[in-house]
Length: 166
Image 1 (cartoon, one colour):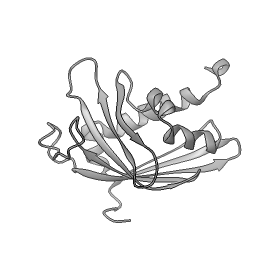
Image 2 (spheres, one colour):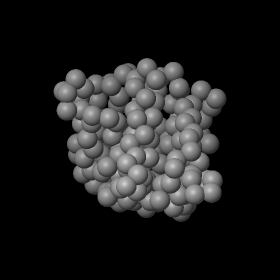
Image 3 (cartoon, helix red, strand yellow):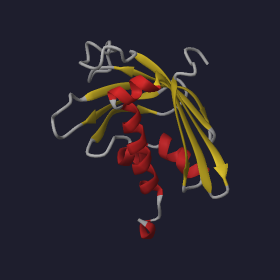
């Protein structure tokens, strides 16, 4: 994979939900609305077109006001149901215009674009979920990106549990 190396960010976990449901949670705006933001934040989708060549424009908002709104343009490169999603994540403004990290007020070391690959492997009635983002783990931890992914996956797993199990 282009731009990938041993310094990239990798997160794996077993999610207590079937593969098809976990995949659906990544490809359905209805599901994404519930979990695609870290704890205490909200997500807004300005555009949604989930198909190869399509994408979405999203904004993660922190209600405390300590951070600026974080707009991101996602472009899907590959969607293989229900095993794999590959997309680019690019820093953007509210109109979808691409920005540099510095222009967006982010850590200047954050890349203007990363590639995200997520895979979903069945493990009985559970799913082995793996995330690979082309950004160094050190930078992902320093900027809060890695802890945000971990929180979002916690929220995702809770969202996918049957109502009586929550």
